Length: 190
Ligand code: MN
Image 1: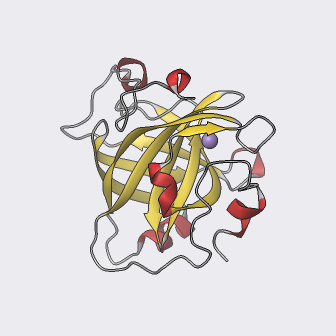
Image 2: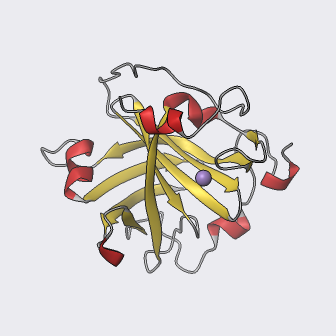
């Protein structure tokens, strides 16, 4: 079951995070899929990139957050799949629970995989995916490339492609800190 790991880490009688469907519905159809970045002030502040595939949100924790500068290669650590409903989640995860802290929806929109004859899942399995993001803060082409740092296979790099949406030297997380849903920052969420 795709969400087993997600469920096993959480006590849904304590956290207000969505339990999600036990059996993700195959959505199929169009090419536009949900794209979300959540800003998560847990033990350390980080950003969680989520990309819809096969009825779940494939997820990466990005310690430095995304960048619009193609020269910046930011580490993105693959984590457990999340339910699609997680894309709406903002709130506080209680102390003692997995990921305790506050979460806001920092950016949201859709993305398209740019595979030639390859599905998004196949690109991820190969360790190199190109996508076109249409968010409120991030737009244009991005690459996700798996590295083998430390002999692990969950380390990826998130890199902005050179296109008209690239902004060399611009600090998008610093300049645009707030939730696209509520206009709040993580520390204002209770
Ligand atoms: Mn997180």
